[in-house]
Amino acid sequence: MKKIMHWIMLSCKKATELIEKKLLTKLSFREKVQLKMHKSLCDACTSYEKQSKLMDQLLSKHIHDDGDGIQSDGVVENDDLKKKILEKIK
Amino acid sequence: MESVKYQSEPAVVIKEWVEAYSDKMYSWCLYKTNSREIAEDLVQDTFMAAFQSIKKYEGKSNPKTWLFSILNNKIADHFRNLYRNPTVTESKINQSSDASFFETWFDDNGSWLKEKRPHAWPEEDAHLLDNKIFVKVLQSCMGKLPPDCNAAVQLKYIEGKKGEIICQELKISPTNFWQLLHRARLQLRRCLEINWFKK
Image 1 (cartoon, one colour):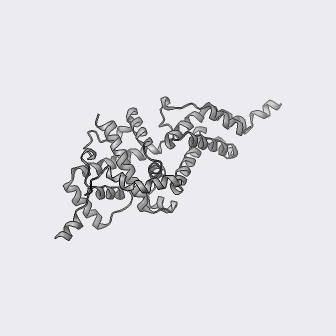
Image 2 (cartoon, rainbow over the protein chains, first blue to last red):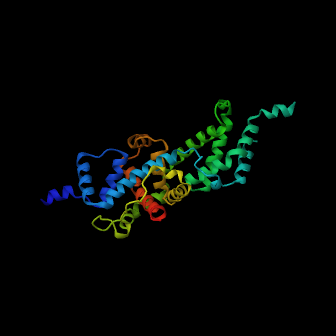
């Protein structure tokens, strides 16, 4: 029985690690069962997985932005850099 | 005659582009790399590459689009290098602080520390990116990540490829990669929760 408990019960630390693995690659059958069992008992990790998926969506859209994501008020002027580049192409 | 000839020189075209786009390119790079020095280097490299291959450009696309495609390749290369060859000090710090990092999130049994336990978020939708204030919060939270965590996150999304493929290309262990992403996720999630979702 103790062995079974150990097989089934994951810590939150390990569960969040598996959630990350699941978003990147695939879980083994054992890992899938472990994570499912853990989430059925743990609201925090259930929220964590939902939020991780949302963050994934947001980040993939955001990081793919081609620079227009920088709002006009976020543009930093750098005149020294302009000078340096113009020096090089002279 | 000489002034007419000069007008067609690549240097003149590049000069116009530097005036028009370099600030925006620099800002984009600065936001992605969190380093003025690196951002300056990448923008300079981009203009050098553009200068050398300007004949290939031939006005087929908007110059800004062309310059940003070169720049984004340079940024991806930067993160690949950063991931492959983290500086000695950085990797040492990471090894020693791995245990102490997780101590600040989980107790001895691996359960959430009370103050770090995730809460449900009120508005969980993908239209958040339309909100400029949210984007600023997201950017500042990304900026707070340690360089190796940030590199892992950027690499995961920059090319939109599957994890296994990224790891194969970079010749890195998938385990290390997802463990760095795990650490990045904990920090980023918490930062968003405190600075956006709790308000």
